[in-house]
Amino acid sequence: MTGKWNIFFYAGIALILLLVGCSQQEQAEGNLENKQKNELILSVGGEPATGFDPTAGWGRYGSPLFQSTLLKRDNDLQIIHDLASRYEVSADGKVWTVELREDVYFSDGQPLTAEDVQFTFETATANGSVVDLTMLETIEAIGEFTIQFTLKKAQSTFINSLVATGIVPKHAYGEDYSQNPIGSGPFQLVQWDKGQQLIIEANPNYYGDKPEFQKITFLFLSEDAAFAAAKAGNLDVVAIPAAFSQQTVRGMRLEAVKTVDNRGIAFPYLKSGTVTNDGILVGNDVTADLAIRQAINLAIDREALIEGVLEGYGSPAYTPVDRLPWWNPDTVFDDGDIESARQILHDAGWVDEDGDGVLTKGGLKAEFSLYYPANDAIRQSLAIAVADMMRPLGIVMKIEGESWDAIEKKMHSNAVVMGWGSHDPQELYNVYNSEFAGIDYYNTGFYSNQTVDEYLTKALAALNEKEANEYWKLAQWDGKTGLSAKGDAPWAWLVNIDHLYLVKNELDIGKQRIQPHGHGWPITDNIVEWKWNEE
Image (cartoon, rainbow, N blue to C red; front, top):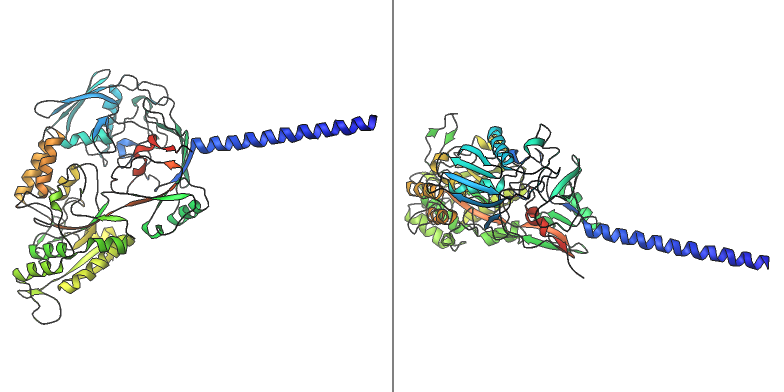
């Protein structure tokens, strides 16, 4: 009997251990499933070089993640409230009064008040960074939850400063803030291993819609390493170049997001013969001819560029603001039209005098250099392709790859492949207004048109965005003149580059808005809306 009971006893113990083991395995699988449901791992761009301080520029090309802004744009790029419960602008457009929500707390539990807003904008002004607040005269907290901005003069684009500037806490701002940010945004920083990863978690004090994901890890990987990690199943979202777009990855789909991340050719607008205060040459006798610029614009086959250089992922560009609320669709024209381009050149006196296939006019050959940054493969390919398209027309572009330091000394007298793209129409003003001629990388060609300047000035001085947009559109083309190819053609805009992402099949990343130039992490703009699809 004793032996039999021993057998039963040990058999029972084995059964219990088996059941316990199964339970532990099921629990582990359940924990893994919960982890997968609550966490994301992304590789969507480079590491912010200056950290996470909005007063130094963080968050201007995507969600600031850790901070909130007074206003924001929805997925249709319309202005809506965020920290602001309401705002009003004085009749002369100079005084902006913003009332704040009273239920907002920073991630450390301290309330957000008008003093924090005042401190943020004063700090950003003092920093003199990419955050341009030179239009401000005064910033004053006129109540615990009311802030008043007084501008030196009316400026419609000031509203974008309220959209793009994340609010920092006055009580917790110091020299290391960019490394350890505290804010009122949907997430808070947990760990930053520089050069490797950033780990963030949902902010329990966030006043808005709660994100579905409690933890998100951003990996800072090269394009090749990120693609390999995606193929291994280790990433939920990964940004990829067009060169990888034809490869499939099991369990992931390709999302192509439309952008104003554009590339175009900036032409010297003036004839040669002048120099800047620094002694840099200005002007080019070939590109100063309107017929040359218009013919190039007409002859470029933008769809061919998209197919040949971008693997089909892009859209033709006609201005730097295509499809944005302030874009004028009348700027679109039929491109790839060699015959019309030839006619324009012929009517302007450009002919092939010596039979070498190169046009001349008054002894001047239709030749000029086209520069691109040597480390940019897409701009190089675009430059080569455009030059090839111009040869049958009798225009010779000499392709030159250089560093930006070298290009800076040549960009006022030579054509350059540039790129822009912003959700702020101020950029349109900076790129085309004559007062920005030769300033930084803005109006490099020294473009000037008095009528265009007047439209741009009126857009800037408008009392609301709707009124401003009408002037922005007229500046592009008013039926007679404008900054687009139908007018003065100081640029030949080429393409808007789709931003490409591989996304887990089950992950819903919401409606993606038209994304700006590829700085930062623009895909994170609506990250609070992301969720797993219901099975």
